[in-house]
Length: 86
Image (tube, rainbow, N blue to C red; front, side, top):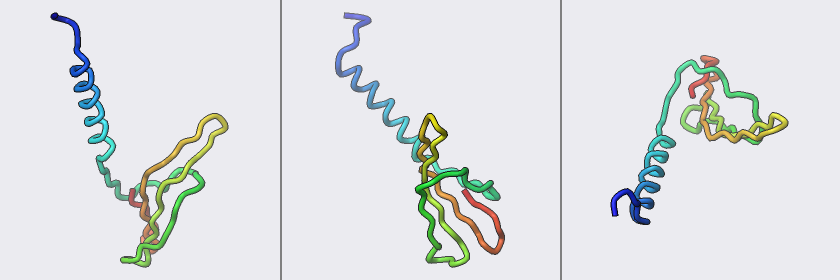
């Protein structure tokens, strides 16, 4: 019958949509001279073991009173240059 989708067609469309979203989520954008990270809590920060003058800052969350925002971004801070790389 024309115009009626089978279960396999629906699954294929769903899988294609998921694959497109995964590609989008894996995209890496590097921003030099970025502004620092937004206010947040429960983040991780450590010294870069390969460059001791650089701090690595990852993730965290922010609650605005209504909604919690969860971050999965990574920032690097160069102590000598005093600038952020996102």
